[in-house]
Every structure is written in structure tokens, then in C-alpha cells.
View 1 (cartoon, rainbow, N blue to C red):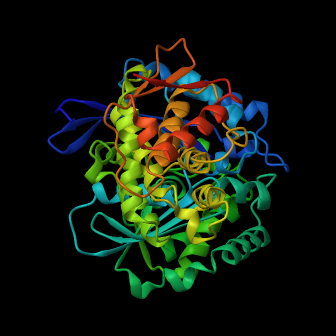
View 2: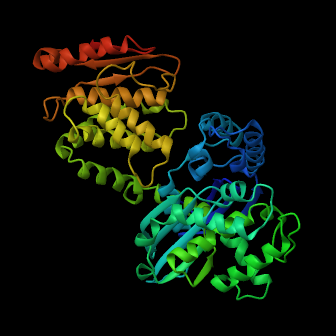
View 3: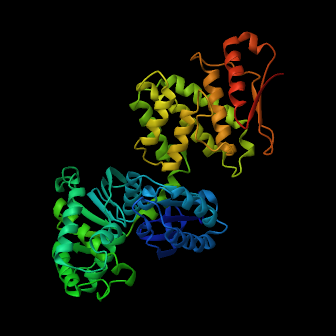
Length: 499
């Protein structure tokens, strides 16, 4: 990446949406601009876990303002990530589809552990280099992330469904602050966070850091109240609770350092934070400068090269865990990549290398379901990928990978996929053809083999082979003829042609 390149990250949180813009300079990212809007989208989830139209509209309006600022940015230099509210929302696709169009860039819903990993990356990059063992806590609107790590490496990551917005709605619905409400909120938070005690026990870390949201707000109030700057202590939390109880309600709360947009959710946030302090026996927590959005920015740098892309090591780990045939996976991956290179010129974003890399990941994992059962192993493989912990991957990205694995053999109509998505269809076709050509688990003879895809207006693929190829490899020719029939039941057409 060239010095001076502008990078941007959009954090679509449950309480706030944030935009961070930085300039790359000799391996570091320097802030150019930071925008934050309190959208409180997490308030808009109903009992059926559907986002209300009002909540979605607030989010779209904010994304429109962010989109104006991001106009002209290279798509490869922008990453928008969504967290717990959109992980939960049943109608998230409606929000994401329109949000993508408004923002001008794709929106990735990331798993909880991936959110935790990115939070740690953001915190670690803005801390001084140290060998200390770190505990990082981020209390968001609807989830709390906990991470233990050292230097730039997160070792233990987890996300829990407890947060400032959710707890404020549940235990302080009218904004009233009572001792009983705080006690109930803390007990409920501990019931969810209890399982973290053994994993994040104090013997496993040296220094505790709090990132973003609730912890930043509490730290601001404590500092304004005369407590040591840049940290939260148990004594400070006790003092803050007394002030909240004295105010009796969020509306009447007036404290130096307390922003107006934070008052409505401070009750829930403080309850969760006190529960975390109690359970993990934290005496002092330092306020961290880094957060999720900073981790997303640095992840953009890592994804530039395959050897630093975390997703590659995740794919390799999954392949090893499910004991795939490494030699066969490599053969299929190479052939799929060669075929895809023949049709990559039609890609709308011109980023053929990245899309080829993702196709090759699917090829490396296409047989992971065999570890479960040889029968219908492609179905097991698709299920595994849809439900696996896969660091580096967003949920839609992982689902797309699972569709490729599910669809690499068998009937095409079974796929709940968008057959209007030309990129996906080209990846799927190349993977299916590669599996056929490598069916004997030997290096296939590809001499004279060429895949033509025509221009963007056509839905026709032509696989050309040299004269005599079908007679030399009759089994492969038979399987390819079956493949032609399979595509006849889709909007796309595959033809075989002898040169």
C-alpha cells in the first residue's frame, strides 16, 4: 500500500455508528477524521427480533451522511462492519441491502468472536509495545466482548449477549434509577457472564483495558469527578452508583463528563461493568484508545497480501481439523484457479485476485464434510462452514463459502443462492468443473482446455477441449456431459465444444 492512501472503517454498532478515516504512512495509520452518531438501533428490535422501520431509517440516514464523506474512496480501502443488533435481527438483509446502496460499500455482519478479535487488534495497535498479558473488555449496546492476548496476538476471544442498551431497556425501561433495579441488572449480567470466570481468571492477565462505549463514558465521568485520569476503579464505580441513585432517573442526571446521548443507557452500562469487575476480580481498568474500527482499519492492511490475511490460516486450520485430503484439495484449488483466471476479466470491481483467492479457499475446503460422513459430504461441508468459528471472516462471506462447498457437486437447484450473481456463478462453475476434472485424484490433463464466458450480457459458458480429449478421458467426458444437463435447470447454459 502506498504512503498517503486513505483508509476508512465504519462501525455499525447497537448504540452508535462510527466512521474512522485514516491515512497510511510507513506502516502506521494516522487519523484524518472521526465521526460518531448515536443511532441507538439496538432499541429497535421487537420481541420477534425484527428491526422497526424507524430504527432502520435512523441507520440509513446516518449511513447516507457517512456515504457522502466516503464518496470516491477505493472500495478495497473501506470496510463497514455490523455487530450484535444486526447479528440478531431477522430482517437484517433488508437493512443491509439498502444500507449498502446508501453507503456505497458492502456491509459485513461479523460474528461475535470476530468482533472481539478486531477490538483487540484496535486496542493493541494504539498501545505501546509490551510483553504484558492483556485483558480487553468492550461493553457495547447489546454485547460484551472479552479478549485475552499479548502484544498483537489475541489468544482467547468471546462475545456475550449483554450490553448497555439491552440492559437499560430491560431493567431501567422508564429511566428510573433504584437500588433494586441495579441489583437485578447486576445479577442478570453475572448469570450470563459467569462462564467467563474460569476462562478469564485474573491469573491469566496482567493489565485490564476497557475499550470504547460504556467504559469510555464511565472513565470520562470519573475523571471529571476527580478520580485518576484514564482509568476505572471499583471505588470509582461505587461512587458513580451513588450519584446515579441520588439522581433517581436518567432525565434528572447531571454530571460533569456525562454526554447527553449517554444518559439513557448509563444505567445498563454501569450494571454490566460492575458485574465484570466483580466476576473477574478487577481492581483497576485502563481506558484504551483503540476500538473495533481501528482493528478493522488494520485488518484492511493485513488482507492486502495472502500471507498476512488471517482468513488463509483459518482455512488451513479448518482443513487440518477435518482431515481433508491435502493433495486433492491442492489439485482442485489449482485447476479452479486456472479456470477462473480465464473468466476473471468480466468482474465488475476488477478485483480478480481476491475473488480467485476465495474460490481457492472453497476448493481447499470442499471435502471437509467427509470427516462427518462420506454420503452427501458436500451438505455436511456447507453446514460446517455456516456454523464454524472462522477468525477473519464475516458472516455473509462465510455463508458464501459454504454455498460454494455445498454446490460443488449435485443438483444446482438445491442452492438457496442468487443465480443473478455472475461472480458467484463463475466461481461455482469453476469449482464444479475442477472437481470433475480431478475426479480420479490425479493431475488432470488440461492441455487445450479453455473456458469461455462471453461478455456480461450472456449467460453462456463454453468449455473447449482439444480433438481426441473425450476419447482419451471418457470418464471425465461423461461427467462433463452430466454437468451440461445440470446447468440446463438454471438460468445459465454450459456447452462443450471440441476445438
